[in-house]
Image 1: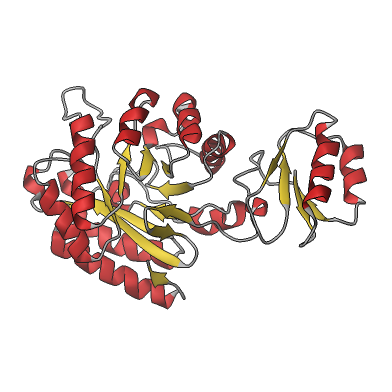
Image 2: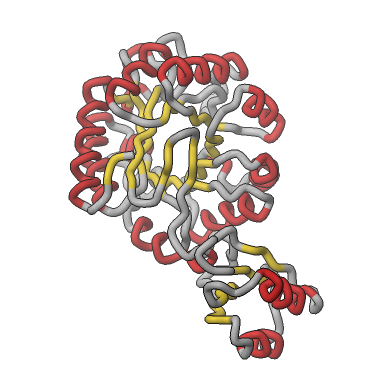
Length: 337
């Protein structure tokens, strides 16, 4: 349950209410929300205890979220959350674009310059690559992180890269990677989610290939519960019976998630469709449906890309996508980051 208190309730009164719950073995978590005191009871409280607290004049309302998540629930914040990745704000009425090659490769510097020139905001690139085939390119590892960070610094762009195992976390911290991506295959790798949560670095959490909305939000709750408040959800297409495209982009989750969670949401149309020429219309649709950002792949020469060449945009195509995002943002009452 989530207890939303009257604005201006003093801190000692908030602590008194939390202590009453904790005296009955119910753990509580205080929201970082500044507009009003809000706290969650993460364990089940008895109906008698809840009724007692509801009678207190300081308690404005008690909300039971639709799912058993608490810290990810919309009611845990007064306003939708803004996540800060470097100097880029994700959420809060602006739309950001993350772009770069699927895998960090020999053309990264040129790609990073193209990302900057196109007006995108964050450089993405994989140093560790989870691949279906054990014979496919697996990434440059630590050397890839170094190259990615150097390219980001050279172009004034924060960077995001996928982490596959908790053992890799020190390398990401050492290279000051501003945002850690949890890929679709690792959405329910709970050991990794716990470690990422404890690190406190902003996280881009991708939806699993067959992950339900509930399962996705529970994964976000793991990260939040273990200490990281900076979580971004990423819709990247789900696996359905349809084989005409790589996956099926589920834009229905955008208005749904707005009701369920305060977390910002970005869309990855590239992994959803798997075909470069279809990415632009899906990107426009995503922004129109309320996405806080887009993440796409761009490569100066997709024919030599180490992975996912078919869904990599050319630099001029990325420029057009950013221009479209600017227009769609304005149409929906927002602006480009």
